[in-house]
Image (tube, rainbow, N blue to C red):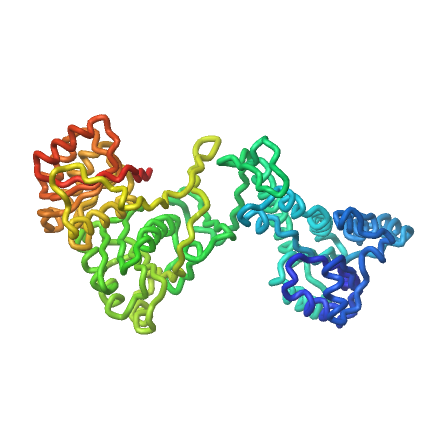
Amino acid sequence: MTIKTALLSVSNKTGIVDFAKALAARGVHLLSTGGTAHLLAEAGVNVTEVAAYTGSPEILDGRVKTLHPKIHGGLLARRDSQTHMKTIGDLGIAPIDLLVVNLYPFRETIAKPGCPLADAVENIDIGGPAMLRSAAKNFGYAHGGVTAVIDPDDYARVLAAMDGPDNAPGYGLRLELASKVYAHTAAYDGAIAAYLTSLADAEPEPDQPPRRNTWPRVLTVQMHERQTLRYGENPHQNAAFYEDRSTHAGLLAGFEQIQGKELSYNNIADADAAWECARSFDTCACVIVKHANPCGVALAESTEHAYHHALKTDPVSAFGGIIAFNRTVDAATAQSVTKQFLEVLLAPGYTPEALRLLAAKKNVRVLRVPQGHSHNDFDIKRVGGGWLVQTPDDRRVPEDTFRVVTRKIPSDAQMGDLRLAWWVAKYVKSNAIVFAHEGATLGIGAGQMSRVDSARIASIKAANAGLSLTGSAVASDAFFPFRDGLDVIADAGASCVIQPGGSVRDEEVIAAANERGVAMVLTGARHFRH
């Protein structure tokens, strides 16, 4: 089946003139609407406007253009059905073999600050989704099917298929494009539903943005499979990695794997934990993660020095870990990290010499992740029969809101250590205790049921690594419910501590800090991570 008639109606005009010219050169009769038709005519392309073809003018300010039997009959008629073909023939309806449509920019419109409701509503496409669904439904049968295209990136593929032995896209390509259509229209309708169900009941003033609720009552999330994984957390579990196509630069899903074995479920989960922590620092940082918890973090003037300081925190746990840098990895750093067993290495870039050295470790998974400051719109946790949804924990508490509540006041150097410990604690599973000194962590206690046990474990980790905690700074991701945790870190040698505060026993804990000569800073915000 060759493509004889195509209908083109696009909001995104990228590449459409060249594509139309290529179709016309292959003998395809072109139908088009509104702005697309005018653009093609101005470019010298011979095109028939849909209104002239159907005999029905566009009405209602363009709200009705393509909702017509001559359009949907041409898209939906099965070419392998004599009845269908006779019916459209009797009615003077030509089969439409190729549909090229992309939709009004609804999501882009509502993203504009102060978007009025009227603007949002006018950018809800009606005819476009209807045509796409008709064409995609008719993608496959015995004698060919309709090709539905929504993405300019697919224009070249369609032309290549038309120049192939079948003179038209084959079943596999039509199926892929039809699947793409339904995924696109589902996401489009999901965005509309989320927007409408987020509106407050009060009618907005004309030309004013409507009041929005905190959350939509209907939330649609669409993810696209990037790769099937060998298994999940355990070998008896199936798993796959899905990505959000709206992902922006800086997030893990934008990674490029340069070398190494196939990524596993746990690799990706741990890599995300390492990368999120590393990219949060403005200065050169190295983060080593094991089982989704940082086991060593350091800031330094070079990636090599940052790595060595981070490794000192817990070299035992670092074995088989994930290492992330927020700066380009050079040869000296590559040579150092390859001396230990590691699963994944992440960085925004690598020098040619570093890549040559890493290539000798064929099993090491080396990922390049673009720098960026974007965040996920929300975090999701699956529970039985539902989801827990929240905004990301990306709050940076202004330091001018920190309160020193003890007689002893931290020095500038101590405040630097407190900042590092506090920021690392945000990425450690609760209950979290982090010791730090001179730009590096010294001991990290994670995921314990009691805060005092996390404090003891952090101290033990430092002792096992041969690190002194004398004069160190400590961060706690949430308040100390009793003074016992404060006593443990003071016994270990801590000179200052940063914590949210908010316990009914705050005064008791502050008194203990004064008694032990420990400076204490309250942030007023916590960083639970479950």
